[in-house]
Image 1 (cartoon, one colour):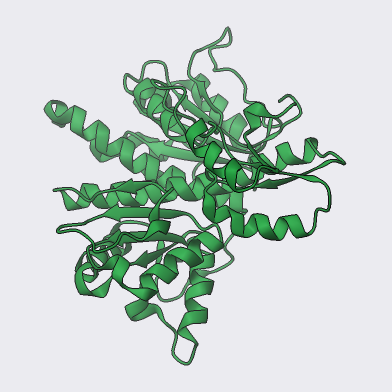
Image 2 (cartoon, rainbow, N blue to C red):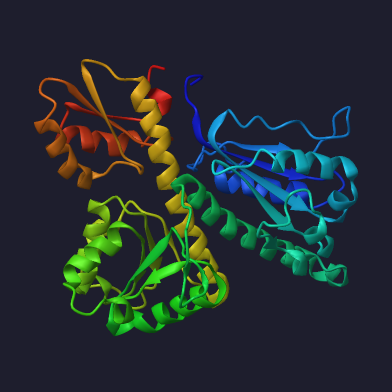
Length: 395
């Protein structure tokens, strides 16, 4: 473990007198690392550190930027933070160390946050001020929940940018904004899923900094649509609106298989009303959600779950590749997958085994390990392939 340099560390900084600072920080820990109330749960596993307690010099503990390949520093800036000279000094020192691998993400939780200076004047803030209006004390619980959701959405996207080394050189001339490194491919059956998908597309365009691919309007003229679909899905996260008719449609099934072939993140939005004649078997082994009664809240859930999968894929791939490199062995070949293994992976395994000779093939996937009931099925298919996680490697 000591030889591993994590792909990303996250630091959350807030003033000790900010009453909701710990609540927000714990929610971010649960999102980016793992559920602190259920430590054995499956999570991304990004190390998240807190910086709020004052030391002898009235500043929080210093941040060592050498412990990870990249660092995201989240500042929860309320009035106490702005008024504290030591915290402003701490922030200014951090801002001088920022570069393409180390970035500050300021969150404004009061109107004064934008005038804090400290090297942040040219940065884009995530705006949470409307959720902390003192006249809304009776709604504080709901406001805090909305604020946390907004912060999560922005940070999931921004951390994906950071890991991807996404540095846009120019703006989209039509949209007058920087393009997104993350594109959502909206997969749906036109017969009973198009209306909801259109609403979701409009929601993203009106509220978020994300790009979407919607086949009705985004297929370029003069191009082979099958080839274009494959290229789009290869570089996108697939959002599946799973309705009664979805599995009956050939192209819907193809989109799932293309996404699995290219290891693209997939999220399934369940919207089955009457049932299916046959469930498509390859819709498994991926996270699911529902829209629910409140459409806007449901759409935010879909976006956050999808961005979570994008970040998880990016982070896990880099982390597992690091484990793989320090466990190289003349007798073994390690291949990395970013989600729990399934029978579909044997398509790749068949190819791997052609090139490894007498070496043992190890498939490395993220912790926690699968249960014995699933692993036994995979082993029965090919007992010469070992499926393992970092916790079981001999480091």
